[in-house]
Image (cartoon, rainbow, N blue to C red; front, side):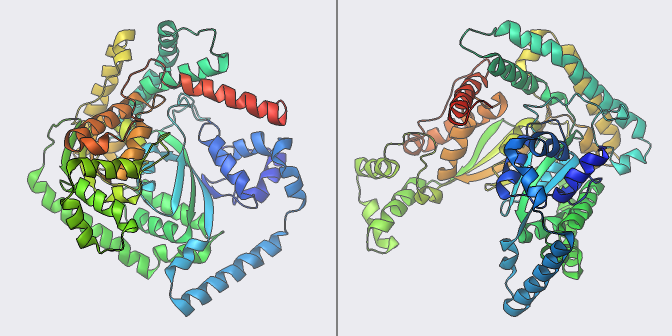
Length: 538
């Protein structure tokens, strides 16, 4: 764990629930400071405590020195927490409404966890807002104080006969990744030299992002990362229950530490996660998983498939949208409106759709709720890195299969062009061999050794309204090429079956670019200049 000087510990103590554990809560901080802190944290290689110290507490702009002087006494804080707990239990007993737990929340920093673990933590769709350290803006080439690379040493594996092979394989992944960073950066700069219209800052940031984009596939799922979490008590309680029931020991360990820290902030809201009710729910999750696994074993064996397949769509989707679009404006039952729509000409139907969308001036102008009545289901097979990006659209109905090396991997074309195909393939081949050995005995734990370049299959079901949001956003120029291609393919499939609905997605970007982040960084320069003029030079 990171060490702090005595002075630093004194400064940090009022604002974090502990100073020596990887999971801790923020305390005594204004909400705006917490938001700014987590935002900066997602693009920093530093720990959250170090970001808080270096960039907030030691900065006059944050105004935290004044906050320190006016902090409530520790005894008062304990009394307030106890009173809040008593109040919550009275309300819960009196009204029996679990939604009361949604009225209190907590910020958590969850550090030194694997990328594999983040996906389980981020599966929850409502009540929790995660922010994860980016593989796009931060290099993962630093080592721990003991000189080892930053990947999770899973307990089961480290206590097994596969320990040495597991560590050697992960070491090889990280060493190759680190060795290629300067070489790929040089390749990117030679292929796309800086022009006079681009600042040094914007160019360096764009080159860094492109280098990270090209190399992130070498990182194993065991890679250690950091997360910021904000959520309400009810959502935390359900998440903890799921984590306690997980097959992986890392998940269960995270759950125990999370509950311990949340108990210092919102104790009553999360205590049922591991009481008799929570234990019953955990067992229910395990039984379902066991039953489904038993059935699935009758049909084992990986199969291929296209990258993006439109498996199902609502063939009456346009009709449903037109009915729902007219519904608020007619004092008629929906059934009667349906008959009106059925008697419309094609031109009249198109007029309703176009009027409902109207003139969209930018991608943030979304269609109304009528577009939620038409759904699409896509089966997608793409690299784990792309999945992690699209997984952030948690409000969708989506489910993934387990990570393995059996669906192939994505070789970035730049790797081939730069002449490092051999090095990349060496990582993919070694990790597959190690996975196959481990998976015979520990199939769940074997996932840790699989790099982000390997493909995973998942499905996504979403409505036409979400299609506008997700596909326009994820096809934007500054996005990673891997998920941009998926968004573009999904759009093409929708266009085939519902051309009228797809026609309104006029902010889809179907092009390819060299430095995807360059234009976004140039815009950031302009914004920074405007802020400097408004508030003075920073």
